[in-house]
Length: 359
Image (cartoon, rainbow, N blue to C red):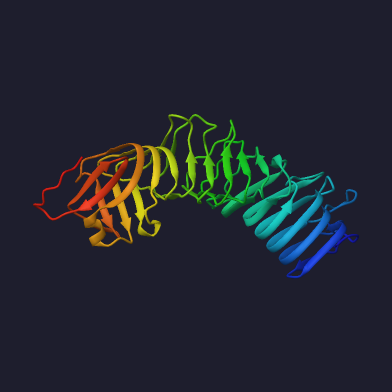
């Protein structure tokens, strides 16, 4: 593509089918090439961008743009393969399966915009040695596909964006840098972990699927779900021993999984949805102070009169009834008694004047 003539350019787009390239796939050389993977499957042994010797003037950058389909590099990637060249990789859709993601002789600029980066082997430095990179609100999506991988790069927001990180697939991905992205952390499957030097702020909250793990225990730190975030833990959010997850005023936490020590601030929301059935959010310890809100969704008024279990914890501290608000589908409910028994919190509405014992 655009190989020998400095004034030439080329566009190569794949939209479907299955193609195997047993040798090299070269994108650009003296002129720029744009390769877009929009659908289908393409398997390549070696992928190169702008291979060859330095040319003058330096051509505009070549680009790989993933918008769909699956591009699988079975051997090596050389992007770019000439020291004077800057190449671009945009992951906006589809699956890009590679042994690792790193620039070669020249410079590589990467925009993580929702396309999936799939590992094909274990590599503690799976993403490394890039000249420029950033995350959009669609995010860096990593599928470890059963392997153990990680990165020591700081993951920043793209300009004007709140970048997010999404972990997919079996296996583990470890963050070994103090990250600056401000969008949510999503763990659909497997493990997303912090290394001993890694850090995330949970600035955009978290969403942890059933059976998945967000492992923050490598850092002996407290963490906060800030105002405006809505978080769900159906898997596990693991903290170091003795550390606390604070749900700040204006933040919401729900789910059916397991967390460590949880402190709800005044104005924070504990969400409970009828669709979860009898499954509860479990905590090692949970404190619900005056001013916190228990938000019940999908239950009937009759069920609330019978009593709805809200949360479970080995150690459970709840402010007196009346100081903690209870809503049913967003409508405030009063009066409601809160009872802690056997490590669970139950909310029960009653008619004024009814004698009810609260433990």
